[in-house]
Image (cartoon, rainbow, N blue to C red; front, top):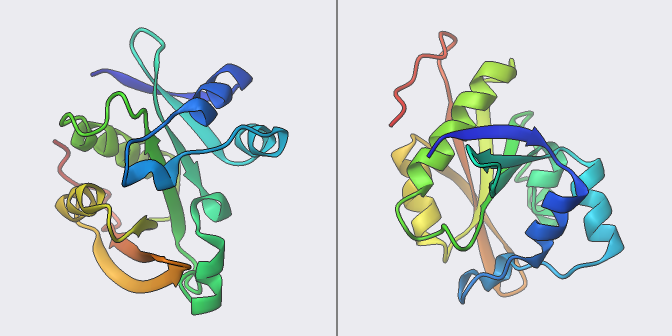
Length: 166
């Protein structure tokens, strides 16, 4: 799968807002609203497309990658680069995650000076947690939002930015 990063546009944003994941991943489903569309277009979201230009997923960084209530628990007190990702549900669970996440990490390492990344994931999402651990991320802390528990996971890269990619 050959991937590239594109600016988020309205077509990609509408497609993302229409994605429907099967339970238990339906927590990640979005409802279309003008506010949700505006967030995808105005915040730090980027589309990830394949060589045919089809939307494979997205990447977001900064506050948009955080679960807001986590701040109340001190989850985001350290100044790290928060990253959030989403993969097209039609491609999820088919062994595409490692290549997709490796591409994102390489892009971030090539485009930012911050070498410590943090992500937040629901604890039930064992597939994602295994993927992140495989890429060197380790659990930092846990917090909950209602009935859903989340963990933050952190990875610090050496200054040389030399890491193996699959």
